[in-house]
Image (tube, rainbow, N blue to C red; front, side):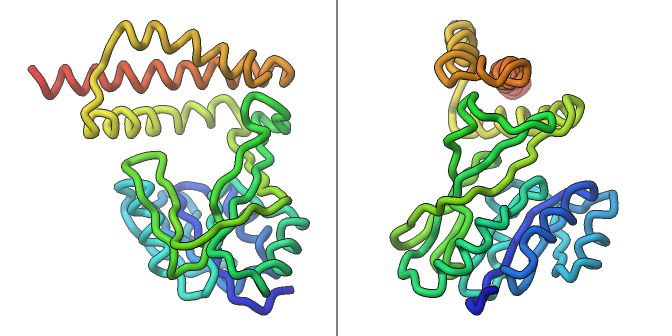
Length: 253
């Protein structure tokens, strides 16, 4: 399908139920797969090796560092990043294979098709999501803190038409298993950047966060899933700020 070398790179920890589907979705497009394994305690590393991936063990310290380490292991001209709960659509694979043969651009943003609790989210602010995921390897680097890493490239970027499928959370339990880690990292990052807890700010922000997702971004049209997404996202904001308060209490006595 493709004559220009592309490497798929993934960072993962305890993703044995999803990572095979992710890797297999890129079959026929990529020439190699690099997986940075965050010291998984399940069969993630074994599954990846069985599928022909190069697996590098590295203890997780931040998303930025983990992904830069993964990018350093890529030797192909092009690098494509996926998370373990994401897959390439067939149409996207064809689009990438044809486009990179002749393009002079340094990277491409890719639209996302987001699924939540097993169903596609048509609204809720998730229907217009795009991310820079395909880049010329030697022109790219990740920047940022503990969370919300950003991928930057030296040069112009374009935008593809077909989506990455993102199967974010199959169950409510899965959402909250990651919830604690992400809110803790977000709070620590805010503290390191000098942010401090304000009760007034939280009281003003929370209603807006919910109304933004549920009404302004039309989450109401996603039914119960839209209500849950707006509610969980608002609770996420609340918890990261009270964790920021807790860090202050511990460090600034």
